[in-house]
Length: 307
Length: 269
View 1 (cartoon, chains in turn blue, purple):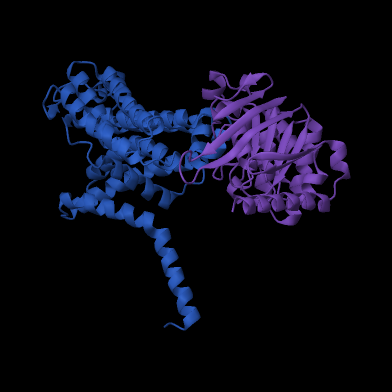
View 2 (cartoon, helix red, strand yellow):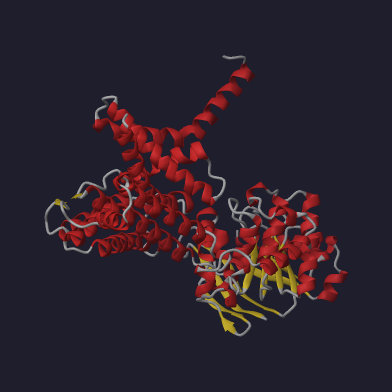
């Protein structure tokens, strides 16, 4: 792999770690597998694409974030107040979003942001105007993404230390205790889903500008992508504290992209990648059960002399 | 003061599994009272506490705490005034969070601590607050103050229950509900936690209702005793009456009642 491929993979890893932060909030902190993501990612992307084309690159990012955030709230409302099963609540929102996404794009399934000003072109101009050398300018995208990811990480780490953040963590950890501590768990779940999807939307909005392209199928399988990165990250780099987890997630997302680039460079069919990811997630989550099974077998063998 | 006026609750109404869990219970709990409740399984003891705390909504009657009607108040809103401990020592704390984080969560539930600023921008405890927490926790005598950053999941059941007690009383509640909170602990730890509980209730003059299966415990602690059966209050003893009671007396009263039940059902046959 060339240096360019590696740096490209790291860049995408950084970009997708923003989404992984969102999945971390729902899947890990709230213990709520949220399937809204596949739809809300596309919603963030299409909102960003439309507004970028209209000439508002910054507003595009903000609006993309808010649209996804709202989608998360809908799922939360369905689950907590209407008692819809959480998997179904996510799927319903995701399905409904498909039509909404098409509407936002004006009926077309894809949009091109070619020659449209984005936060990346603006940042590149900013760096050029300061007069930085061309070696730095070449990597302006990487620098911008690094800054954004660090900012997200700091904000999230601080958030989890506030009363609200503590309550959110406790809700996923021991719901009964939280209710006994006079905290509205329904409100906490809706807040958590809104925040998580806001991160997904932010990622999608930036992603569209980065790729200068929007497609209605961009969001498919995104949740598994994020989950794979989180699992890789936490397995390799640990999850002792919140900050530790957040750093692990960023590194995990980079490893994920590097692995993907490597596999593609080795001539793997890109269509096989999703199967590989899904299998990886399934296997890692099954490990405790498999361990237990082997343990039982051994015990039985010891007791009955291997019969 | 807590007033229960004629409260009733029925589960699975109009089905074969219909259970009249509470039948017209009336009870006045004065400020500073420490009431112990005994009764066999299914007597409605836990149901009573669950109705007061808001886990169940009552079908009839009134629940008034310090002049405020609570029948339709949401569980988490009632929790502002009511502290609770359950039999399962794992229920009251968040295992993946540190002792300090658990305490902080409990400490900030008081109203003045609950402003928007406190919710979104206040990060961690101040030095003075942390000192206060450590002083409070040191009262437990379990050396938890030196392990403030450890995750609660690493503590033993007894330690967790003691911590839950501290969390429930850190802002003195108007009412404390204890649902057999020492029953799942080993005898030595149970005694220790019960002693700590009693001391705390006396020091802070907390109005308390405690369910127990242990008759000796029910006689030894508190200033009033209630015996429940089949969703009704069977007997009520004041402090003086309770002081004269022995375990044998209580057993006898029980047997009398179960004998009555027996003859009732025979009559029906």
